[in-house]
Image (tube, rainbow, N blue to C red):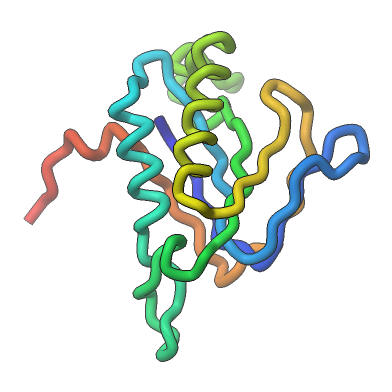
Amino acid sequence: MRALLQRVSEASVSIDGDVVGRIGSGFVVLLGISGEDTDDDSDYLVTKTLNLRVFPDAEGKFDLSALDVGAELLVVSQFTLYADTRKGRRPSFTDAAPPEKASAMFDDVLERYRASGLKVETGRFQAHMQVSIENDGPVTIMLDSADRHRTRRG
């Protein structure tokens, strides 16, 4: 499971000109689900997102988490995070989960985020959406649940 986190001052998602989700300060979470993902991947990614210390403290240092600051979350399904561009000019998305699995896991991740008590908004799964983001910093961080199995260097 992959999530591209963008710390934002505000963000919204629209479908056919209608705003279906809007947040203030927090994270836009672009969420990609692979065919290999399990509940353990969901646990890892949600826990990491909620506890990642990338919000500034009183001295302006990255020391506070989404939970610490009461961040709001706009979570948007993003299968293109599993694009494979190694061959040719058209990306392959064979590593992305099929829609049935991805939809169920996406809903599960939303419920896990909501269980934190933070405000959680979303778009609509498989819809063509326009996402408006006012990036704060900018701070953009990629999370990949597969990273938890990799050893750290040094």
